[in-house]
Image (cartoon, rainbow over all chains, first blue to last red; front, side, top):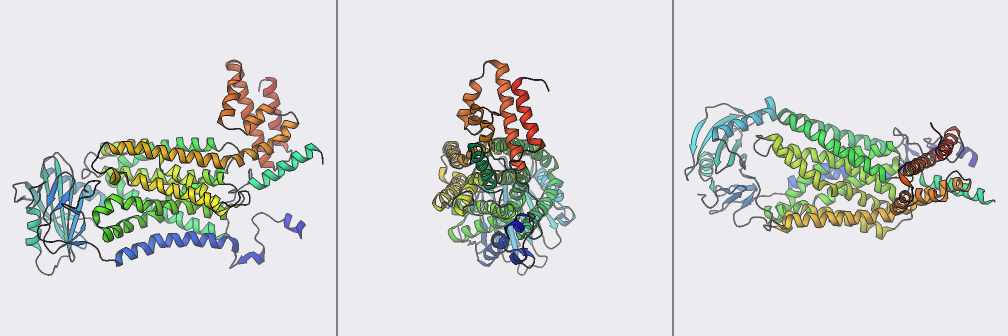
Length: 210
Length: 390
């Protein structure tokens, strides 16, 4: 009846409009929004995870990084982040690149830095410790000098994390800091150290890689 | 029916149609939209707090500076957006709900999860270089505009009478965009703090903060205002006839502007001077579009103001000039101010107009009934008109 309806409190949902106690009119829009959230948070990441990607490195390939830095990735490894020389985007190259070989990953990152390689390694350690706390990577071995094939001097240290071991190297090339992080499980099948050493040794200013 | 009765009936119809002055209760256990809102805003807030607490350990100073500066910046936009909502005012509670949706749900619980995987999929399909140039512009307009815009679907389900017109979509969309923008800006500031391996964190963040402040005027706030105006047109509301073509055009334009903005680097390429030129062009297009969306949607709100205050003009509480100004656009308000004779008269006329706005709000709150607050608002107008002291 109209009078009864007019007297109805605003938040009152008539019983014939309910489903499991919910106002039926509110279910479709709420489910549409929930479906979009599930699509974005679950389905899209799962699809990305399921699609294989990356570019297999061929002999002669060179990775270009911001700041005019490049390195020669090991043949047969997979480039999962970063761009190869000759295929640079119009917007300019990025500041990170990652190559992987099974569970082993080598990531190179560049940014302006004016200090020494030792100062850069200390800066990386401080930032990593602050960001990760006790869950982060902890430098365990001595810091050692390292030199690229082109004569760039840097430092390298081993580290240990909760689920992976590896090394961090730091160089400073013409005002550009270069961070190299190698990660992998403690027991890696095969010995990737020669390939890793080769990639680190190939770090050079633009045009000088290799 | 007398003329006065006709005016009163038109007032009642306008208030019923517009939802102006309606109260809003957020806690609605029988409303599924309430639970979905809580789930997604809660999830987004938890994710953001975890992110912010991690970053605070390394860049605490940057987090404080960015939060304070973008908080002030956001307050300025909040004031401005409330100011343009000058006719049938939107509920402040609903505006806050919209802001929180943009800040936490649309960004951290939705779009942020999809952006990186979609960029990764573009890279896998077309190569890293292509993804760097064009990936962002073909990802964010879809993930972010949909995540923000779908908030309006929930707001309609939560407050169907308060989201009655395309202009309600405009205002709520602007606040959803504001919430999104502020938290995204803070995230960008924190991201740039780590640019030099964490060295010179505050200096690096400050340049990003200033850049985002300068260029952010034409970003998420404008895109969402336009998108959500289009969404309301597309869906149609009891007070806003469905206009699918106009709705799609506005939503598509918002997405196109967002895509152009994100792809400026790819479009300009190595031609450095093109970037600032393109910034100016895209910002200009964004302002043109948002002005069009505003001008398209606001007349209905003005008609509500006129309908609510017309009986007051008939009764002599407000003058015809004041009614025209209350329900008029910027040029009418400007003419009203210019008609003042000297500073004191201008001040008096401004006060009269503000008091007339108060009366309109009180009438909306009371549903058009003459209750004690409405009578007091009328008395205030009479006092100001007579020049009597408080």
